[in-house]
Image (cartoon, rainbow, N blue to C red; front, top):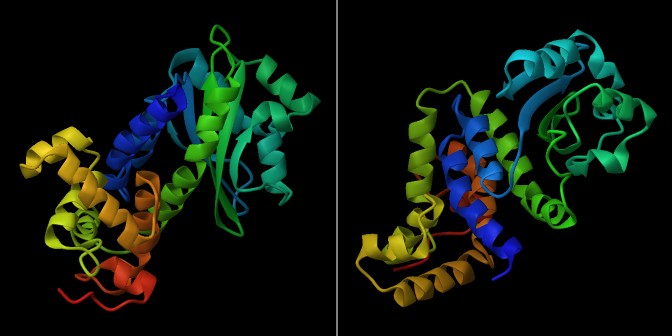
Length: 277
């Protein structure tokens, strides 16, 4: 098993917590924790850039002392103007997805990072609407090594899930409904009901909750081989090929759950009727 494959398995396990935190104040921390579980990160931050205000808003960070002053307070006070990501966003030239700052940096950005305890940075850019973008930034301190080619490839592979989760989180937060956390849990419980057998739905629920194959099999009182057969059937019925694609399908189908609470969100997403038992 390669390091990349091992890291993706960790990512698939940890991302379940972020899914469960959609719409809550703990979401960005859970998402950062999932990414940090796959590789070392020193300064994770989440920023919102919008046309309605010139300076960016910080949504999440774990900085204190001089690092907070430099990377948050000074940045909001005007240092952001030297940030190439701010410039690209402000000019409407930013592309959603994964980006490595060394690949987009100009002289101004090098000046920006030269004044900070930062040797490298990657950014996940999520476009919320035509006026708003959210950037999840992962930075390495100067005493650390820059992101390797293998690490960049891993983060790029995680990028679609990261941006989908952030987009869905914002939609849930902006939805004027109580009981968001309970709603997400109910959506997990109903997800796939119209297409899967009862046992397959049990397996799917444990997958979405982040349980490993062995622990999920123990919880259901079946062998790991039997669980793998159920998982293979689930993949075929949902037309996916990996656990990451299952998470992506669940996230994308949440909007359909809002339109028909209490029903399998896949019914609306696929436009299918329940499969006869």
